[in-house]
Length: 130
Image (cartoon, rainbow, N blue to C red):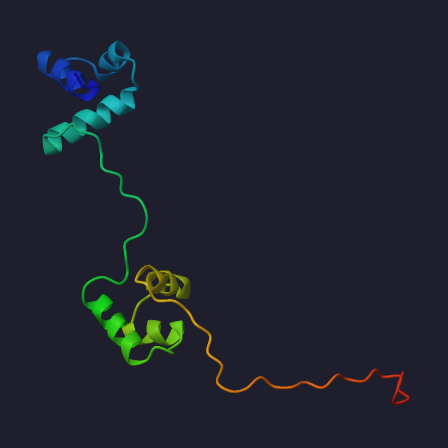
């Protein structure tokens, strides 16, 4: 039987008169854990394991996601800052970049013109400088 269930049942058998500290000692857990478990059981009727709530909430969901996808489709060369401004999102540029990468978009540098030819510069001593 699950430890949480045993603690709740033991507490119920004592009709709520038992000490949480005594239950904690009996089951080899901390009094704070027993207190939290019983509080959650009284409030929700559930003593199962807590669901983890890790990470940040996604910024681009629902309407805002559709808006970002439409902007990228319309203007694929828009900068991340432009996309953030146009969607009204309050997140970092890195968050937008990671979101687009997660959706399968990749950055591709395109040359807008031919490579420039740079002549080798002369040293200052040839011109008498020094």
